[in-house]
Image (cartoon, rainbow, N blue to C red; front, top):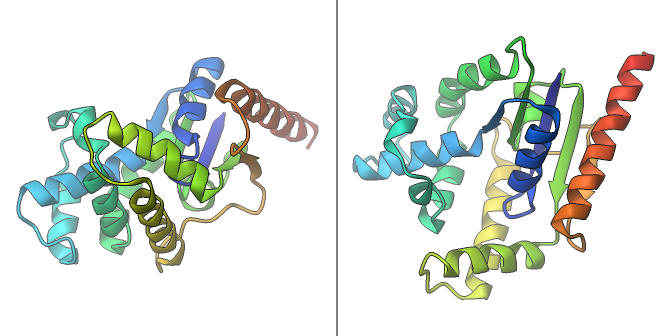
Length: 212
């Protein structure tokens, strides 16, 4: 079984993905981590993020083991990820890695922005997790405050709006809800309620598949 979970930053997508991965006993890949790592690695190497050939070279030689999770959760890492993710050669460099993970015999759960549309369009269940940008901004702002960031709430919200625009307008694999995905709006839900709703959506998708 393949479960594809896509959505926006700070929507609760990652938390839901981890819970569902444990619930169904499926290996989990946070594909956004690949792009954050590529962005951070490029910045560390002094590579211009607007140089597609140089950034693609970084992506093809990415060593995820060289990053601490804290390195990949900063505001700069998120911004860099959004920039490099718009480069077609970077997406191609990381495509095979994601595709191999998705198609392993034991099944998989992947979360990102184009899993249900590009990486695993044949997924058995597809979810799109989202929330109002003001709600997502407050969640992200609190997370960044814990990391010592001095960004204001308004600045974080504007950064999310800008990232949404970049992700949705890029020419190659734009972030968009698959036609057969189920929307999980977490704006007014607790984590537990969102997870329950997500599991119900997956169960319904599995049932439809069994009837097909």
